[in-house]
Length: 168
Image (cartoon, rainbow, N blue to C red):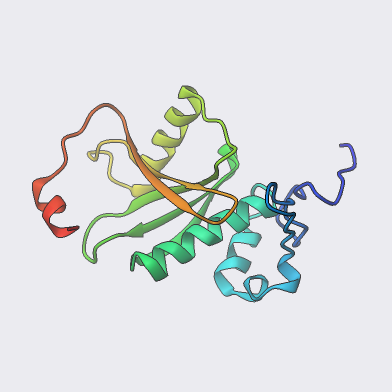
């Protein structure tokens, strides 16, 4: 494997490494060992999964914080899918409901139809109920930490009217 420059993600998550330099509006470098995030138990748990690189862990941690602090999800856990090199988050949006899979991804990532299908299948396994329709929520993270969520399903699904009224 060729040597990487300091501005590129470090492969593997067994130890913290430099995150990428953010483009536009001045460069910003985030180093886990210099920030409070690097000592957070959930961040360390994600690092121990040894999947992806420090950037993927950082993005997954940002989504975790958003789900827990802003969106008040319940029991959010991180799960690694080694064969897909993904860190996924499993949690419940409303207490007592079923598990949902959230897949954090940078805005620069490109997803093919085949990759989405693989993630849908893995999500069904993680949720543990083969009767549920295949679905996952894609959490797209922008360089300024803005997160946009898209629910992807296997085919079209009509929204449940009860859920719509609860979220207003």
